[in-house]
Image (cartoon, rainbow, N blue to C red; front, side, top):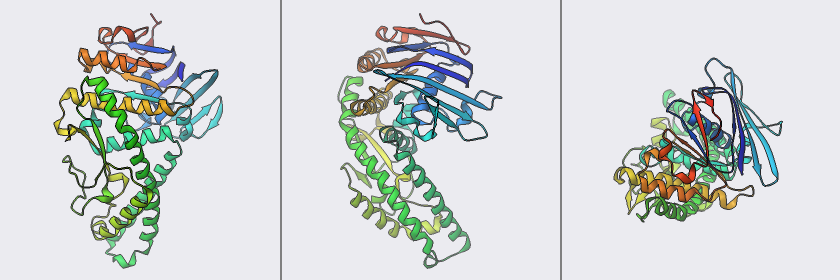
Length: 390
């Protein structure tokens, strides 16, 4: 699949923008702050319903405007689609495909992309929430139905936490909390589905991450992944922290029965702690994806270059999985200001790794940072204005 045209209205610094795109590499060049990243951010939103830069959709709407529009013409073989989303400040967002209204959460089924940006270094060096989000976004791209499961889990989690807080503040006894068991059942049911899906995804990612890391770094540092699951953790491991341990670490692919049994046992074991603290202490919202190089946690041990290679490997592995199972062609690869962060050898290896994809979108402040084979269709950007392709 490729994007043949991108249209923006009141998105970030663009009042309007019309951007023709071609198959193969497309390079957007301009000084910092001109709007290069805004272009790939808009397309990333179509496939993930989120931004890699901000948590609120409102931040992407041009100042003083009530809404923003992102519209993309997509092409896959003989099939053409017009995909559109309208971001609104005061009402729910709206989406269309070929001018027919759809639910916004259905957008990812029509467009698949993988974005790598400097912020993705946090996948290796940042908090567990970022790694959970990485897995969940990839899960939704592969199976959009899971977005509903995730939304339901978050709703149940909020309701259960509200009940626990109420119990703590009012001094209710555990025996008076019959309602809690109802929320337990829903939490276990939805949580088990998410944990099982993540477990399967990590198992599929592992060989691709290993291969992608070697492709980018040029050597094998045994890049590995493992799930650290709160339902298998001990009672002393109740808080997320910067220190990684082996408690709850699972490298095997888990079944629903295994997860359900461990989940229920953990809730029973930690009931008193949860009532004392007023929060849910186990579940996919507290799990971790542990990244290792040479059997050591990448977080805290990996060098800057190794961390970049690992983050790139995670994204390239994601693209490989999406490419393998897609019936509409490759995902669109987007590299946002990546080459400036890499040394010359890694730039060359990354260019080789992405060369075979149907479409690659690249942003750069300095033209010379980008390997020549990726500069075929170069577009200059200045103060929110798209100049003619070179």
